[in-house]
Structures are given as C-alpha cells and as structure tokens.
Length: 344
Length: 289
Image 1 (spheres, rainbow over the protein chains, first blue to last red):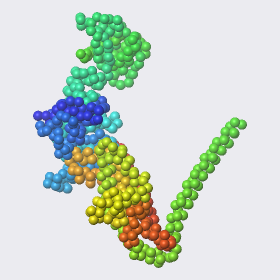
Image 2 (image 1 turned 120 degrees about the horizontal axis):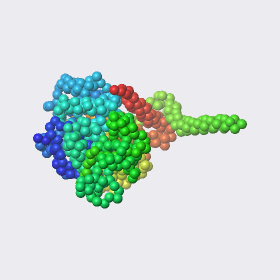
Image 3 (image 1 turned 90 degrees about the horizontal axis):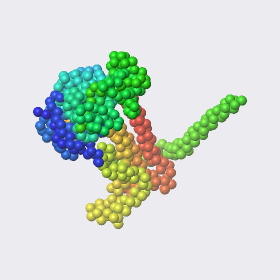
Image 4 (image 1 turned 90 degrees about the vertical axis):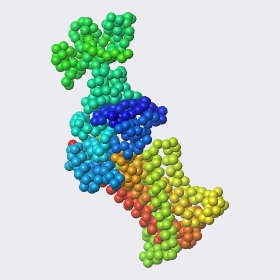
C-alpha cells in the first residue's frame, strides 16, 4: 500500500499556478526525489504533503487516510527545512529534544528517556560531542544533521527534506549525500526530498518525480528517466543535449542537408557522449565541422565543434579516442550520431 | 615642479578634510552641550537648590504622591494592554499575508505623526457629555473625559505603536520557518508561542516595553486635554509639574522633573545594556567541520 498518495492536487498563489493536477504515490520505505527547476512547484508539493500548504483542490492520503484537512502537527511527519530552521535560542540537545518535550503529558517520555533518546539520535548523526553548542556555532553540514536528528526524534513514518544539500559546498554535499543514502537504508523511513540537481536525484533516489511548471513530467527509476525520457523537457533537464534538425526519409534514412525537401522534418535529441567524431567523411560521419574548443580536464574530454551553418555541437570523448584523433583547434572533423531520441 | 605642486595640493586637501571633520564634531558637541547636557544639569541643580530636605519634602507631599500613584495606575493598565496589542499586531502583520497590510502598518504610525494635543481634543469631542459618543458614555453611567478612564485612553492612544514598531522588524527578519518547524514537531500554538516565538523576540519586546513606559509616564499633551486638572483626582506627574511651575514654585517643579528625567535616563541605560547583551549573543564562534 502507498504510504503517501496525492490525487489531482491544484494550488495557486494569486495568478501563479504552482501545482497543476499533480498525482503520484510513494511506497513504504522508498526514497523519492522531486526534481525540477526552480519555480516548478516541487517545494510547494512537499509542503502540501506536510500540511504546511493546503491544496486548492485534490486530496492527500497518508497510509490510506485522507489528511487533506488535517493540521500538520497531527500528521507525524518529519520535515527538514531548506535553511534548517533550527531553534537558535536552544542548544543542539534541546533542538532535538523539542519534539519530545511538547508531546501531551500522557505520552511524554520521562526526562531520562528523553536524554537517552536524544543522545542516541545525536550519535546516529555523529554529532553527540556537540550537544551543548548553539546552532550558530555549527558549520552548515553540522546544522543539516542536527535538523535531521530533530526531525527523526518524533519517530516519523514519513521524512520530507526540502533541498537538503542546497546550501552546502560541493564537497560536503557529496559526502552528506552518500551518508544520507546509508542512513536511509539503515532506518528505512519513507522519504521524499526536493532537489534541482539532477545528479543528486539520480544518484540518491529509488524513484524520481520530475516536475515542470507545476506539472509532473515523468515518474520513474533513475535509469528509466535517464534512458527513456518521456518529454523533451526531461531529456534536456537530465543532461547536456545536442539538437539536430533533420529529415527522416521514408526509407528510414536521416539526412541533415539544408535544401532537402523529401521526408518529414524532425528534431533529433542527442547526448554529447552519443556524438562520435572522425577525421574522414563516411556514411556514419556525414556532417562536416570545425573544432572550436577543447577541454581535456576531467574523466571525459569535452570537444565543441561548429558545423557550416554555425550550429554548436558538444561531444564527449574518452581520453583514448581524443588522443587517437589528435584534435586541435580548427581541425576539420566529421560528426556522426551513435544514438538519438525523437519526440513525436 | 608639477610634482611639488601636486604634493602641496594633496596636503591642502588633507587639511581641508581635517578642518571639515573638526567643524562637524564641534557642531555636534556644542549641540549636545547646549540642548541636552545643560538643561539636564539645570534640572538636577535647580531641584537641589533649596537643599536635600526640601527635595525630599517635595517628593513626600500629598499632591506628589497622588500624582505619582495616578501615573503608575495608568501605567499598570496601559502597559499590559500595549504588550498584548503590540505582540498580536506584530504577529499578524509579519506572519500573514493579507490585503491592506501596508495601510495597517502606516496607520500604526498615526500616534507618532499626530500631535498629542490633537489626540486629546479628538477624545474630548468623542466622549465628553456633549460629544458624539457622549450619550453612550452617559447611559453606561460612566465618566470618561475629566476622569481616570479618559487618561488611560489618551495614554493608550499615544503609546500603542511603540511595542509593535519594535517587534515588526525583528519578527520580519526571523520569518516563520522556526514556527513551522515547531508545528511539524507536534507543538501546539501555545507551545510555539512561548517556546519558540517569545524567546526569539524577548529583547525587542523588552526594549519596546522600556520605550512604552518612558512615554506613558511622561505623556503630557493628550493627557492634559482630557484631564480637566482636578487636583488630587486627574493630575498626573507631568501635569503636577506644570501646576507647580504656574504657581511659581520653580524648585518644586524641578524636584518632580528629576523623577521623569530619571525614568528617561534609566530607559536609555537599559537600551544600551540590551544592545550590548544582544551583541554578545550574536558574537558566537564558528567551528568548521
């Protein structure tokens, strides 16, 4: 059974449509990424699940129960805010203990139980030595982990994270990403996180929900959305793209000749690593170009070439291929396409 | 030769800047001395002109005690009302989006921009026996103008923006993320207010209270209009000072003035103390990973 289920959610802010008929569900124990450019409605969607935002229409079901009208404090959801929203007048310990201390008297744990539980959580996020510090004394990555421990203190059955690595520097971000994945595997809580970073979403999530302009473009596993993008938007959002305007002849042949009138005009979407370069013209490498820019730093060599019409094409070559071709600026090369995608 | 000329030119510039600075600080200092220090000094030196025993006697006079109790009575009623109104108003303005918000905030400044005398006159026009709402007041068997309720309303009108004005920027800067975090952790409205909101605005609130107290105690214009100057009944401390002054008891007037000066100075000292303690709480050390 789905732990989270959204049915036909609409939400407007004034004239701006933030969510436009959004439906999807999340299964127990899954780690799902909401991926989209800024303004695509992903944070609003997360806040709707949490109850911090009420949808104009549509319904939210948690474990089969309609909670659309329920107050966020009764939902039992753990929420990690983008800027952590730590209580700055409390120590790390008190921040984590807050959710336990505000429980109704009947179910509130005793002081010693609180102490034990908080220290256990701080140990889990590897911050037990900072229990007496204030949030302002911590680094970004440490604050992030305190926010996570605080959210976990109420033993939520759903964990929501808004841009969890958004305000961290690149190295800490990658470290924390892997750590979060391990933590998720360890505690197995159903989780949804928001991100605008496609690499983060594809690396971390079991499933990815790609949003654009308030709508869901595609839902699927990282492999599915990467190799079988449903829309041009998804294709372009998940990586660099070369766009070729060409015509497909009835014989199945594809031509990129300017004055050709036979066949149907189509757009061909090609990833840079599916572009191949050759020094001699052939059927496989028909398009004449000139090398414009080379950047060999990194695992792959980035080569930008320009065709006779002035279109820029980006190719990613392995270091071996690059050395074999011996490319230099202004070398004439012939471009071929290994694989392409056409959207009808 | 050109280099030499340039040198002397830059020296001239330096001299001009220094001279300008000197003139500015002289202006500022003399302004402070003439308009602030000297009058303040005069108040205290005049108050003790006839000796300490006269000073103490003035403070122990029946009229003084009654004026002081009246002023404190007004303060005790006005201050809690202002705290409640100020916090509620700042909360509403900063945590919710609604139409006419800017208008409401601008309206908050009305008591600052309006002369207190106008405020007092307005109250008289509204609540006096012949006023617009006079019949309501009369049918309730109450007296507002020339009585204690009028003094309270006049003081309330003049002082109500102080606390809200202090809190709005503080709460605006904090946003509502912390409150939302509290809600997600299961806290009730009461818990959120007392454990999250209040601790984070306490210094702003305290400073607002200090300002409000100083103004409450010192308010003259609006109170003077609605008081009717009934001795022993509607004479507050500032009004008592006026009466003594008009009776040519200058030293007596100054004696009471020291009490008002005292509250003013105390609020300034408290303000400095709050600012420095806030700085201390912000000056925390940063530990990297």
